[in-house]
Image (cartoon, rainbow, N blue to C red; front, side, top):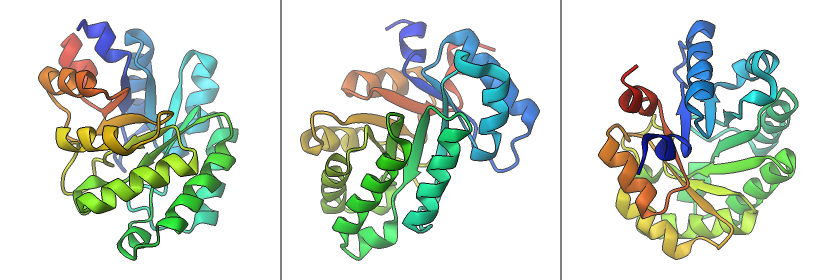
Length: 216
């Protein structure tokens, strides 16, 4: 697998709360230079990045991040606003309280509402696997599929653990045929990148792939 093949599946990510505009511009420039799948940045920087880079750059942002417990109405408004300001892709966090309460219908309906809010734009659903039982992960594969999302995503990168290969294998057994997989959190080596891609991930969210593969 070539460096460019790997980078074409990477969401080049910077989501630290203290990220400066200078740092955001740097990863946007890197994403353009190395042809990553997208750049994933905080919502507050979406319009600024879209104004500067236009359609040259696929912009991804996060909704209900990182804890997921905003109300559905708030998340839907966030998603609509992000798309209006230039986001091409939206990564939402599920409400883990609903998951722990066993209210999977509510989780599905929230995903459906956000997919409606973003329309033809890509919606990825972060289920934060580190807090879940296997049964909850399986049920969430159903929620993501039924809600019409484009991707199921392992992690925010802000939880107690990140992507694990066994979760990718579990997802593949239980998601619908139209749902793709994104691994995120703790993917830091070339071996990790290749492993997740070979296992069937279509995207990998990471802040380190460009530096790792280019040495810059």
